[in-house]
Image (tube, rainbow, N blue to C red; front, side, top):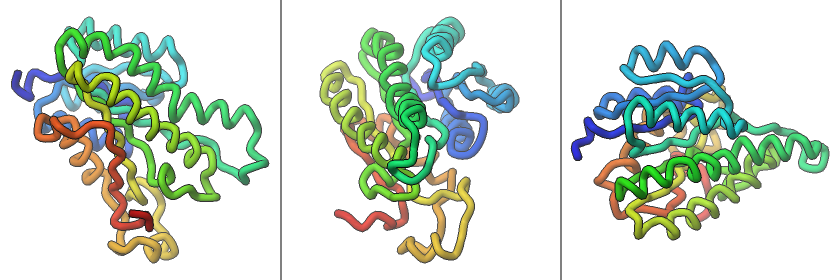
Amino acid sequence: MSTTERVAIVTAASKGMGAAIARELARRGYKLALFATSDAVTALAEELGGIAVQGSVTEPADLQRLVDTTMERWGRIDAVVNNTGHPPKGDILAIPDADWHLGLDLVLVNVVRLARLVTPAMEAAGKGAIVNISAFGAVQPGAAYPVSSVLRAGLSAFTKLYADRYAAAGIRMNSVLPGFIDSYPETPELIAQIPSRRFGTVEEIAKTTAFLLSDEAGYITGQNLLVDGGLVKGI
């Protein structure tokens, strides 16, 4: 099957990294099903020759509608990019339970739910690839974003567990862990923390994601790839 025949779902696709990923996949010939809460996703889908579905990744019915609409329009799902907004922030013990539960739905459970929905189609095709857009806090937790750090570490674990379970079926799952990206406000203090002395670009995240979805990455699965300009101090 050629790349031009592949179908990809991209969530939170109306702006930032999601929109950049959608544009990069369209450039590589993917048919697209774009999903976001904003109606801006409709204009982007029209621009890229894809379809748009509005809804929230935290709502199971919306995810079901996304998958059903994609299958009705394209008849297959070859790739999924799980991208979301930022979970609630705050001082670690001041964050209410409701915000932790919202973060769980926003960062982790949505990936589990969408995996349940798309895996049967990928199993039937004998092939599929999923990339989760996570964050560097999964490996270097930050006090400014405790919900994100805790739950993205859990996402890394799910990525590995899912990848091992479905590798023999030809389905791969990896996560991209961006550092500071130019969709986020830059400050001199943040720049000073980055060995590369610059923010990454949404286009760089898009190209990394497209590579992990491609056949060139066909032997890469269960990985959590930092794309951070050297920000994370661990090895």
